[in-house]
Image 1: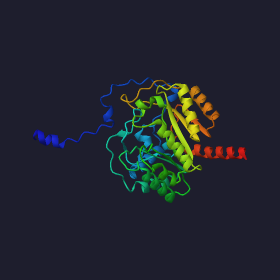
Image 2: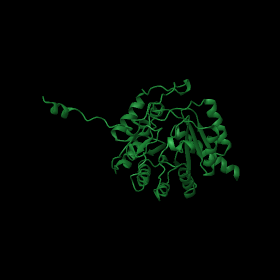
Image 3: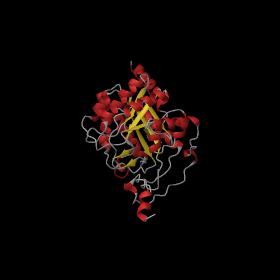
Image 4: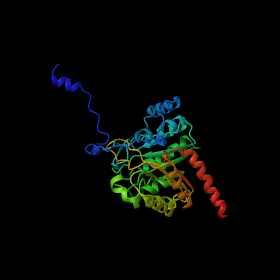
Length: 323
């Protein structure tokens, strides 16, 4: 067999998941402390949830972002669906989602998400996405159609959306809010000083305004945001972000430990202890958040269903106290 024939039979090489990071020097990752370790997912329920996602051709941020809680959440049939494809147009240095040129939108994806929610029998679903700077509306219309599809397939399910920043996408946040999700989440991720190296392409004050605008458009929607710590931020900077979020009337704050997906990603500057997380939680509650989840393994959608029930109860108690 000739060399050209052999070459023709070779499978095409897998595209680089993070081509923009390929030339970066390796950043050694420190050994994880005991409180950050989790068990590998092996339960039958995990496997069943995985099969359902494959059968319906759905992406999940649980897998794409290498979430450490995937075994626990999927055992309980809680998966965070990631719409708008699996390739992001941004290149954040903390994120494990693939970057590059995304595929065309799948018009049938919203219906499949609704089917998955109904099949899993979920009381609460979190829907997130990649960034789609290539789309005129940043994917806002697709979010709205997905919310509508879930309402049709599972009317009793409450819906939480974790949206991108819709930078330079006029009318996008209005479109999502008009679809009436129960919770609108947009993560600030880190402190303003670190945006240039951690979240290039995003703007801290734009993200803050997005959250403020969502609450002004519909005060009944719960708003939520999240931070990672261990990226090199100072405690005073985290407390200032809390103040900024409260000024934007954000209801719910999550704070978790940054974990380095690969040696090419942003290095871990340090591990925050459980005691320090508890300190952040107390500080945030003192600043007026209705609810705060702060722990090493906290992620935006971790225990989201239980948290939503507590969030509604906290609002009801706050309104009763004012009466």
